[in-house]
Picture 1 (cartoon, helix red, strand yellow):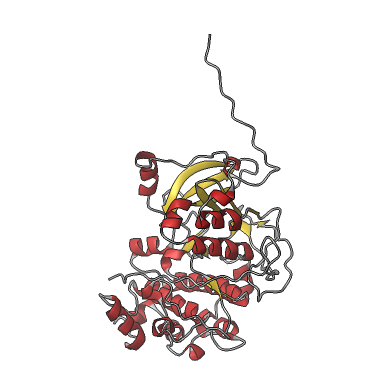
Picture 2 (cartoon, helix red, strand yellow; picture 1 turned 135 degrees about the horizontal axis):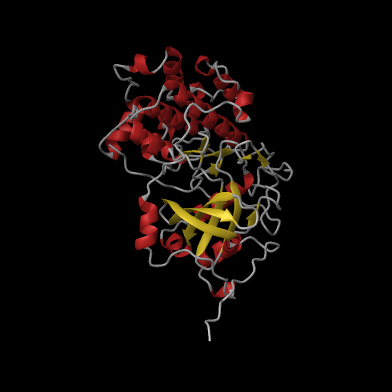
Length: 414
């Protein structure tokens, strides 16, 4: 008698989204709590990036609030130059973010391969990320961890902002004081602990622009103390060959971004800061409407035949992972028997499906209604996001939610 074939259970695409809805493809990245894999939706055949976070590690590292906060912020936003959330769900072991797929690699990867980038290329990336930042700031969100590692290119070469793990809502009436972000990219007002809001993101964008142009950061130190002193007090200097790598208008833009007085910083003028940036001489060649519609051809197209990320992640998954990711049915568990942290994730990391649900905010100061958002399809087959209005701020029970501030610091890189 032949062996009995075990047929797979049919997938219920009418129910809440879960891991059974996706084909698991190659591993493309690794983070502190989990990994990132390329996945394909079994019904629509669309490709996405799946970021999954181990709940146990998350609890051990006391990062539950960060994960919940990131999940909520990503539900609120949708923009052409953000790595947008498309689905969210969980199983007994992991929390899952299904995000726009970026096959072009991050700018750190390209910076390390090339050493520095041409001015026209840098200006294009900075303009696209500036558009994303302006959108976030309109919605009272600051990113707080802008760096080349968190700028990803799609297959065509457009730049997208990712990693909202320490992003928060802000209010000018209550500036934050916690030291948060990656130290080499922190604005002076963070290190001084004198209170800060969205202006810190424009400083970080300036550090990124400088590093992409010249292959080194403007302020450096071998220790945290030295780096703090450099960011807070050192004069902004440029390499001897700066005039060959960057125009005078570009140098002036860098000086504007890296102004220590936030009120005088480029793009930080009260009321019309982003308009000031758009009118700056360095961006005179940018048609901002064309930019937002992704109609301007990117100056660099990633090589689709090469892996634009560290291929060792895939090898590690194949050879070293003792608990490889696979779809598992959930167990029927009483949430009251779980630890406080596990119960918090169970209750607050709620499912999200961008094709069925409206985007909304959990922040009590955002009181506008949002319309449902659907992704239009570009000629490249990828979604182009709209600019949504910030929605009402209620949790699953209709109660206002206040996101807590998260603190994080990083040792300087030489």
